[in-house]
Length: 212
Image 1: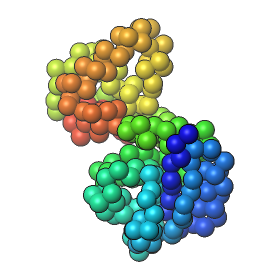
Image 2: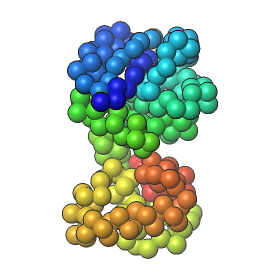
Image 3: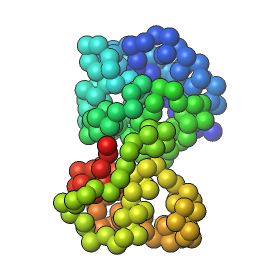
């Protein structure tokens, strides 16, 4: 079994130690270091090859957003998963723009941590379903562009933005999973997005959805 190496960057030592304990219970990961800010993280990365960084957003000296920018520019094979206590879209947007491939609330579970690790290591983005579902996402009153999306595609896009899986969308819309797969593919093609996370960002930037 492949072992994924991890560094935890967080200035709260109790949370950092607790997260390390939980991660060490996952058989396919190994925590190789823990640091309290972005400067220490960059120093650590010169010593150890690392697959994933669990990155606190608010840290002294160099915060997680700035550290993520530097890491994703220099260490292109390292995945960054943002960690925050706050359910705020601003942090989500900033971490995405900095190059993070995941976003978790600090009250995450061991099961969600495992899912996040395997997802980002497969080259996909992972965002906390609790965070996404906490956002009040609705169709806007006015749309800047519609990308020639059908009404059904717009429905699917909103559900994707809410964090629904293909299986969940199929049940909710009373459609087959194959049909949902087709709508998702068309959305990616029409918007030029590479994945679900890109679709969320595209929808936000182009006013296809509102977050209140």
